[in-house]
Image 1 (cartoon, rainbow, N blue to C red):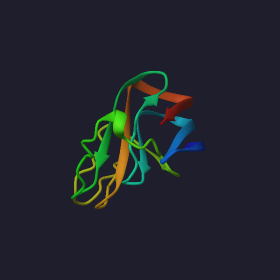
Image 2: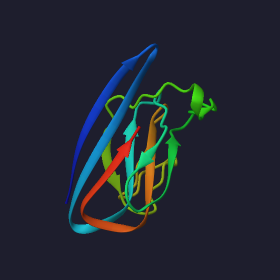
Image 3: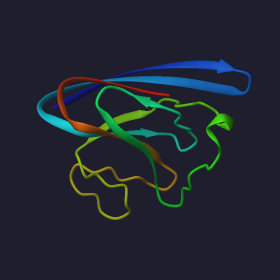
Length: 128
């Protein structure tokens, strides 16, 4: 059983909406080493922080290309991300979804956060 709570803080500036998303997971009776966070396709992810993070990457659904825009030129927005968790080895490839994998549709985007080792109990992440 995994319970996820999130808090989104939106800041509006000149032509930019910046959002910081704080996620707190409470993991009962299991461990997790990979977390996927679904977000709008128009979102640009600038940073992911938390303890024990090995690496993170942005996953794109079919027919969606990475923006290719330098970080300094991106609009910083996360906009109401939907939060979910998947186990190690999850895939964003097209085709039938296996248990504990994320299946992205055309135009969807997700951030995959991989940890050095699986965690249990409380775990927190910040995405901006």
